[in-house]
Amino acid sequence: MLIPLPSVPPRPAGRTISGRLRSECLGLAVLTLSLSSTLAEAYRELPGSEGDGHQVVGPSYHLDPDLTDRGNPKGKQFEFSLRLADSQIFRGDDTTLEPAKKAVRKERRIFVYVPAAYQDGTAAPVLVTHDGPSQLKLVRNALDNLTRSKNPDRRLPAFVVIAVENGGNDGKNSERGLEYDTMSDRYTRFITEEVFHAILSDPVIRAAYPHLRFTSNPWGHATMGCSSGGAAALTMGWFRPDLFRRVIAYSGTFVDQQDDDAPEEAKYPLGAWEYHSSMKLIASSDKKPLRIFTHVSENDNRAKDPESTAHNWVMAGERTAAALREKGYHYRFVFSRATGHCDSRVFETTLADTLVWVWRGYKDTGN
Image (cartoon, rainbow, N blue to C red; front, side):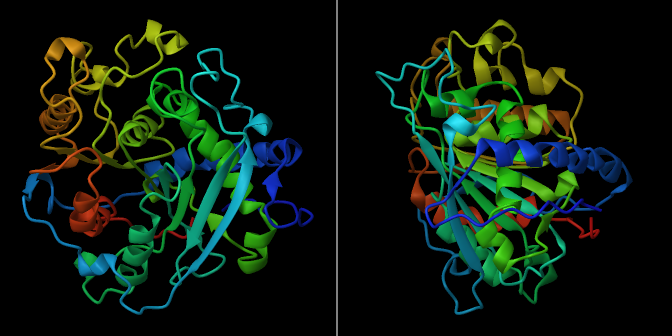
């Protein structure tokens, strides 16, 4: 069971969560999330192998009808902001940043979509997406259509979508790069300790769903992103499989893009390149309880770069998939022909299938 949060006073539109409120919720966060490991050990699912392995799409693409508005009942969407200065994890003042060159946001927007199929009071699974509402429209349509699918093999659970805006800019020495490309559990802790509980204590959301709660089962926690957001998705699961176990990474930045002056450089000198090359983290580590989707485009970033640059996205994507296959993971790898980095056509063609595959086998346990 989850412990209910204390009541909080309402705040006006354009509202932000204060640091004091975050602190009040943090103790409850620890209690809630500590239940996840016990729950996960008792939980079992049998997803089978359907959809596993290497897939090739293109060069022709189409918009999957399940990603369009088919007239089904709609859920409710919410938006609020979190001030970076109120965060205990990503305040926007990290020593690796160069704010004069790469601006840092003062606030980040949080978008929440609760599907019509969700019943208030049940423990909802969640999908955390990176870079704000970038693919939120497609995910909303997939939920509206596939939570009520008559085909049990093409049905989605009524998960809540949490789309989190990055802290600003891109690449090394940026806030976005710090959050997404760092090889640690910092971003996972930011999501679970700050974002989750900001949502559950938001007065507008609470007014609409007084008993909204998230499952403590890590198999009910999925994460999705593209580019460095894709690297963040894999890193969330890799470093904290006790909290996130379903991963979707499009055009993943599995290259050397971690800040050169980050403390993590001492242990992971080539950043996410270490997953598949050099240290070979995937191959050399014990198999983790993860279900992983990855993708790369034929003409993805720096596709002609030599290995020595540690910046060839196509090489990184293919090697990551090969390592997952050799290690025996439930994985799905899509190679898309005649496409580029984070190509919208790939999402429009594959995202419904991707969501169905990554959630395959999930069982609602009520916790």
